[in-house]
Image (cartoon, rainbow, N blue to C red; front, side, top):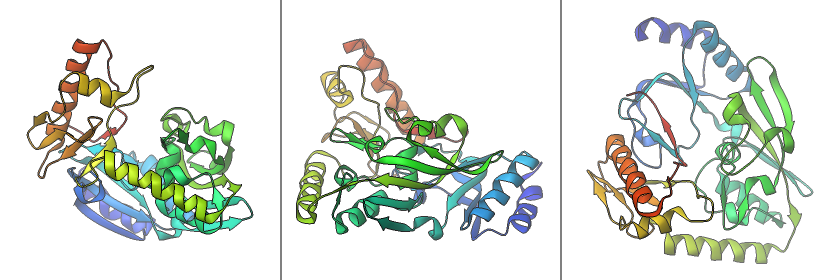
Length: 304
């Protein structure tokens, strides 16, 4: 089916919160890289999400959920079909005792800030992670020896066949940069976090210290997707890349950061092609020099 044949009927059937045709996706990613989506749709209720995914599946229209775009590389040709984003009603945060519930669209830094305001400890490590809560659970984001699995007690998840269901920690199967959501195509709608009582001043002091380390060691001044490679067993990706002499290596306008070799940064005007070529060169050279084959941590999305 041609693009112009399916987009209008989809909008009429789903009645989304907002939508855009042929929308360049670079502005929706922290890398500031990415070609256009055929259709970018924002839904703001569970019912609209169900209508949208159901319609896409019935009509065989490809769809993809995009959060805050902080751990992704979207190819230059963009994404065919529908790119789905969750609207502001999926950003709500509530606190009861040591239990915090938040919508998948809530920025992870805001969730950590809310926890601190209520004197709840456990999310200090996440205060500087730029993604959404949904993306953080999907990837089991972590930093400084802590991961989302340490605080996630359960989640509400949408599947087309099962509707909206609740999964406990075991059902989410959180592991190193993975979860059951990656295999099931489940959409996380809300997460339930179980935290511990703490002193707000001490919590904020730790958040400040960790964010200071981030600013000192990471290239936050340039667009990137965070850590590009997963940590190999018994080693650190950044250190291996540095040992291979690749710090500062550039392809086009993409560069292995001179500040932290685990990051690839956009010097301005980089293409996904630049980044992919640089990733391949890093993998090849690190394997030649050290014997380790680095595996990308960031999600690579879109067509050729």
